[in-house]
Image (cartoon, rainbow, N blue to C red; front, side, top):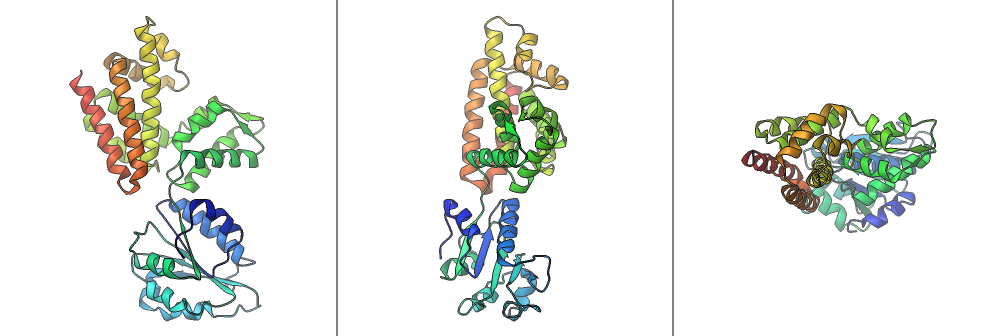
Length: 340
């Protein structure tokens, strides 16, 4: 069958009805989350090696008959069985295709893969088969992140203010499991309270990834072009997705624009920066004040439009998201240098 639509995936995971399931996509955390959910639905005890067999796709490429053997193995104490295949670099589509005509009745084949192109052999084989399901896993959109935040907060017995949710969203989205981890850190910090507020998010996210983002964004708006590559690398190493980098930069420039308009109306720069707290932590005040002196409100508005367009393009072309984000921040830094 063809790949399931996004709206169909959760329904399928609740009641899986295909013996062979391929789960793939660029969001490795979401892929793993859905694989584990499907495995739990397929066997009574995922920790029992007689119920759940784990295979490496690279090994299957050189020994394709092993999949048939594992799929038709009867569990020692009876019951259901599943085979979890972790795809690697080598093609094992022939092993899966050999199983398609007569899959084992009491065994589900669950395949975990990365971002497969439409013409990838494994994806093509599964999409053609009537007894297979294909579940694509793409990076969460904003509405997905909102739902994820509310779900995690609800499970923790917490509500979350709109301001706190808005501040948390740009820090998420690159990887589903990483996003859950960040949300749970906020929930843990706010334990004992009824509602998560903006200051809770600000307090928790002041970690290595956020600091790396701060350095990157500050370098861009200060015109420090030589630092962009270094700081961009640090942000990516800390696990921040390109889309999240662009979202954070967009949120930052929106606050700068708000403060710059205030300055244009006669407010001092110091007072204008105080007006956008707590988005600016104490150790960034001097950098933000320097940016307000450097950028006019008109130029900041153009930068907002540029970042918004880049963020949209990065979502449309997920494979190109990293170079799009890097190029956009470098362009901003060059623009800042020209205006100094």
